[in-house]
Image 1: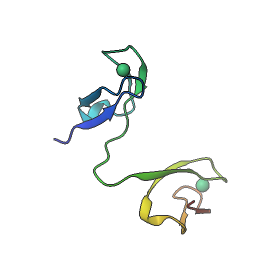
Image 2: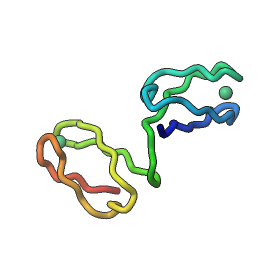
Image 3: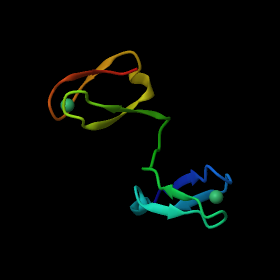
Image 4: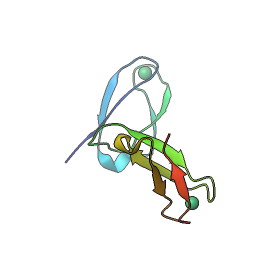
Length: 81
Ligand SMILES: [Zn+2]
Ligand SMILES: [Zn+2]
């Protein structure tokens, strides 16, 4: 199973959690900073977008940069910055 790896922004301690925990709140065991466990990412970084028409959030791969994608929900075309 692929573990989610993330880093505390405050003390830079690295953590590894099960993918089930994605999106959950997490308190750093070292410095007590409240974090949000990120979704598992197996590939390179991705860009977060919000459809201007229906406000749905998307994550698109970095290689879609400069192009536009179709919103899955309302079919509006959204430019990838
Ligand atoms: Zn910390
Ligand atoms: Zn939309």
